[in-house]
Image 1: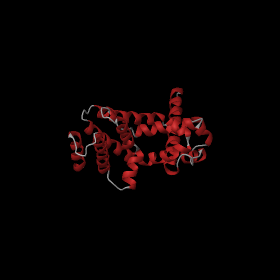
Image 2: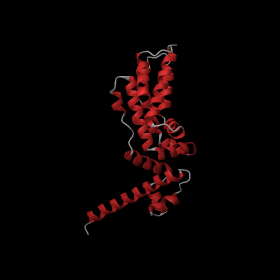
Image 3: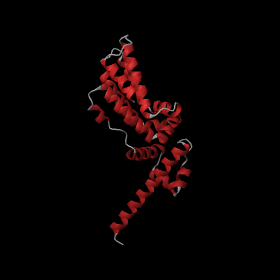
Image 4: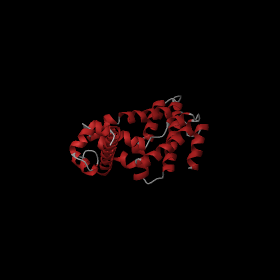
Length: 217
């Protein structure tokens, strides 16, 4: 057997083993959470020895980073560039929230576990720092058109709350509303905040648009 063929086969076998370890880790994290996932359990599910796991991932950071990279490649978050092209701030927010809530639904199992695990696993917060920064960037993009308002900081806080996974989870899972209804509720909250900022209970043009969209939902 040619040497080059052997090297390619060895590299492929190693990559296949690495992939099995990653998939085993992800499935265990979703089933029992990060703190309860041991190297022994990962090795057993992946069909390898503990030493093999350590050979591919020498520490917890390397393992979590590999799993996060694979998971995000399979479940990429929405692209904010599409929203940035929408000039109307209300439509931008409505479309973005619709996309974001769809993504939260798609990644619910993993994100639900991450919310629980992060306080117990500082290394997980470190690994997820780029994703945390991504959602902060999304908040800023969606809040930027509202910066002209007197209470711009409150708009930013409200939008940051609106896009959070926990907000979607509370509205949809705990309160039993549909994704579309959750978007409508958030739009209504933003309208109410805008009305409060001018001390007026009657909707202005932007407020009427929000109410119309809310009723259509």
